[in-house]
Length: 81
Image 1 (cartoon, rainbow, N blue to C red):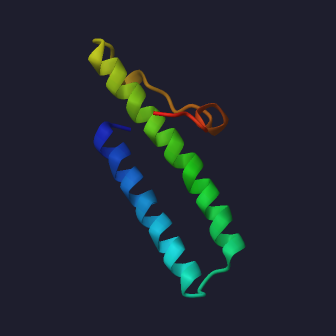
Image 2 (tube, rainbow, N blue to C red):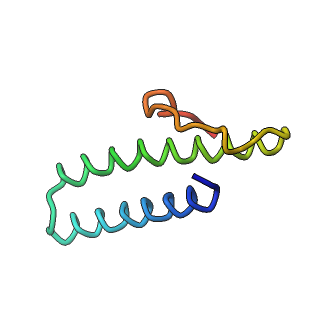
């Protein structure tokens, strides 16, 4: 996945977060459903941001950004920028 694809995926997930919040506020879904999906999205976003950072770091130091790998959610959760 290249940088543009990662950024596109991040944008789509952020939009889905907004849609979930709208859906719960309008009563189309319940709070438990919203929270479950938000948790999934947050983990996937953490992984995308981590992959993007890896790619940028590799490029900065003359390495091949295509060698960056998605790390497990358990590894990237809670990283602070």
